[in-house]
Image 1: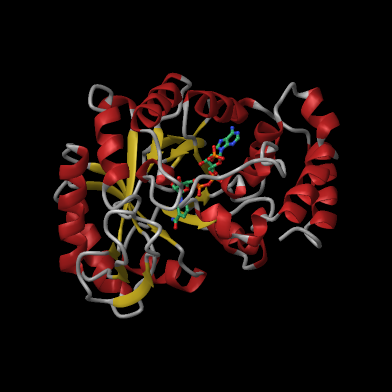
Image 2: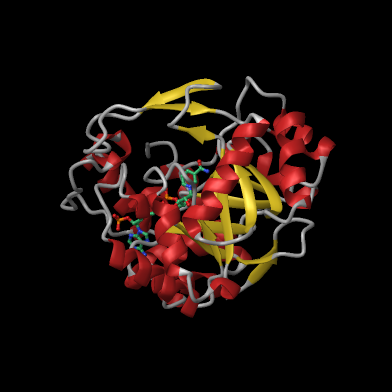
Amino acid sequence: MKFAKLGKSNIEGSVLALGTWSFGGWTWGGQDETAAIDAVHAAIDCGINLIDTAPMYGFGKSEEIVGKAIKDRRNDVIIASKCGLRWDCADGVHFFDTGKDDIKDNGNIGVYRNLRPASIRLEVENSLKRMNIDCIDLMQTHWQDPTTPIEESMGELLKLQEEGKIRAIGASNATVNELKQYLSVGDLVVNQEKYSMIDYEMEDSGQLNFCADSSIAFLAYSPMAQGLLSGKVTPERKFNEGDQRLRYERFSTENRVNMQKMLSEFANIAETHNATMAQLVMAWTLQQRGCTHLLVGSRNIQQAKENAASADINLTTEEVASMTAILKEYRKILV
Ligand SMILES: NC(=O)c1ccc[n+]([C@@H]2O[C@H](COP(=O)([O-])OP(=O)(O)OC[C@H]3O[C@@H](n4cnc5c(N)ncnc54)[C@H](OP(=O)(O)O)[C@@H]3O)[C@@H](O)[C@H]2O)c1
């Protein structure tokens, strides 16, 4: 495993990190809790120390599972969580309503973006309790709240840092301008954004370069396009009821077929490195300028092991360039 500092902090996170959105079950068609806990242990055994969660993932469930899994391994891990999405209070700005199929027991729930200082403090306290820990290593604002000045949110996060409740601060789903506003108030060490071979807005918007130039760690989320880039989502693959992927055009038969065609063009390079397609895709993504860490959602032991090993693959400049050239052609047809 390789490690990289979270920006200018002294926290070293494994470049291949464990994402735990699916642990909440919500929008992922459920998740077996034992498999999730086993995945955390396997990930740690393979050298992963950075674990990303959020209150929103299953309305507290993901944090609870992470807390259980790391109970006896707290010193082996860096816990990253988030704040700013509330489903239990209608302050801030309405973001979305959960579909009634998403959470079977609760039905429709309104979710609000809220980065007001008092709300951030409450969320940090709640997350500490759910995970049964006394400090969160990295606290990230999950989605930006246009009704609260960034200075106020960042001010509260800095107070929480001084009090020892959080160690470092990051932002997610933010623009470059918003990142600059955070930086004008204090040390922002992480930017967490959607980035994969087929989600490349962060290349076009200059965010990857901005982070590289500003020494901010860039944590790519959904780097496998929710599994589509793994090579295992063939047209035959079925998803459980309540899995968001059932709704996305990206997971249509046509797109799956095109994706398989693109991946087949990478086969020689995968073979050279004795890598699976998923590992090759992760290796390419990690070698893009500015992309310091990948948050990959592993749902079981096998995925955790396979994903962790991708950090050890070193592609040559020519291999990266050749994959990029193929990718650029397929970006014209892939959704
Ligand atoms: N800040 C934000 O707004 C935000 C948004 C999204 C995600 N995130 C973070 O980023 C993390 C990762 O993103 P993500 O979970 O959306 O997507 P992802 O990492 O691109 O894909 C994860 C999914 O791919 C499949 N998979 C994983 N490893 C595999 C392997 N080796 N072979 C085959 N399939 C594999 C699994 O689903 P199946 O096995 O069911 O196919 C898994 O749930 C999240 O868990 C979360 O921590 C943050």
